[in-house]
Length: 57
Image (cartoon, rainbow, N blue to C red; front, side, top):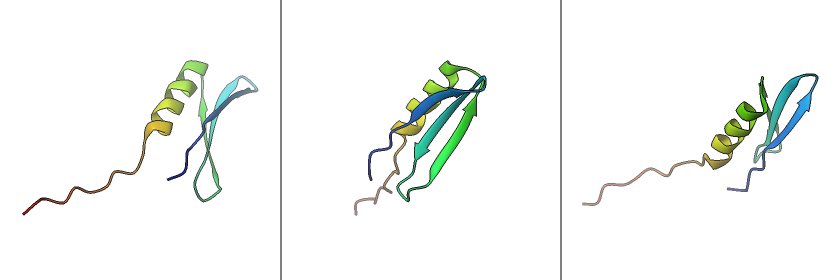
């Protein structure tokens, strides 16, 4: 999986978090405070697909 880099910016009194997905599309989240946007960025950037665990026989 490629590295996801969140971008946090302020536009018209709203904090916006943008993430570019592996397919090139941009996912956008709107937050009321900078703290919310930065915390959400940390959570979303750390989230990675989890491989299923195969039980050993």
